[in-house]
Length: 365
Image (cartoon, rainbow, N blue to C red; front, side):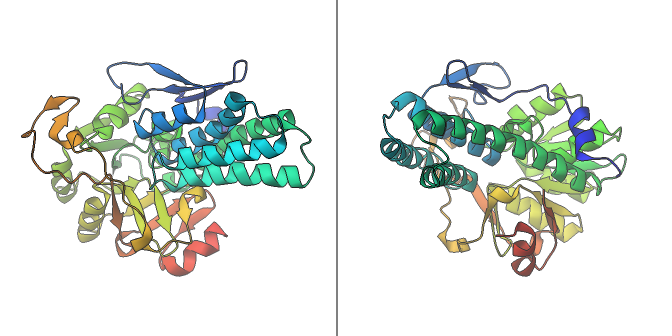
């Protein structure tokens, strides 16, 4: 597929802007994804606590979008606290990192972004690149903007790699929402190949499982694909086996919240099921994620699987659907072992098995 990254930038014009920084008044404006698709509302955030709350309540969600949001949350730590000295600024940033990291513990992009912003601040101060808090603030704003742009470029590159695997007329099964809403750019990770193929004139469609209990598939994936006039079919989570068995799917493409050095993938609950079925039926199963999603230090048993409010399962958008006191287990993510994964697509290249040998070759850290 002979097209350059610059050509793609010009072709791709996102209709949705989930994350916006307003420099004139130092505020972060987020499209409230918890209200979609029935209401299009925005929330304005002014400090790290509000950012953490927005992340925890899933007003913003999706690993890359959380990372970008957290980077701006570190900027807001300085604008909301107004430290007088660089020493005080580092204390403010360290405290903000703790607040933000607790919001969603599984998504590694969050802690990656806060660590990156804090380490950048320490190095800039130590090397004399910034002489006061005002200069540090400018540096952090620039860096948050760069993280956003790097994410978009990474998604365009992943989109190209993924689109090379698609044929005209193919249907892609995904999980949850790994589109532009999840990354903050309007493009996405798992949906990037679909959008790139669509921009290049290919006819590609999507099957989106509803993704209980938060219904990110039915509320968000369907919403943004319909907005871009990309054909999409909504199915229940329990229908994914049948649609694959009947040959309605040529590829499975999902995002990731954390990928380990041996190829274990942590993603939205239901991903493991799709991977096993795809493997059984010989359907390629691809994971798409930027290198910031990789955790090369942790072992699979060390990663915390976030559990959320039981009422998310007992109800649908506040309407009871189960006995009020029934015991609930509500894990947000599951783990897909590497043997079920065809390849992991990153902006730096496509990683094939054996992942325990090839991840570090591509990721490079």
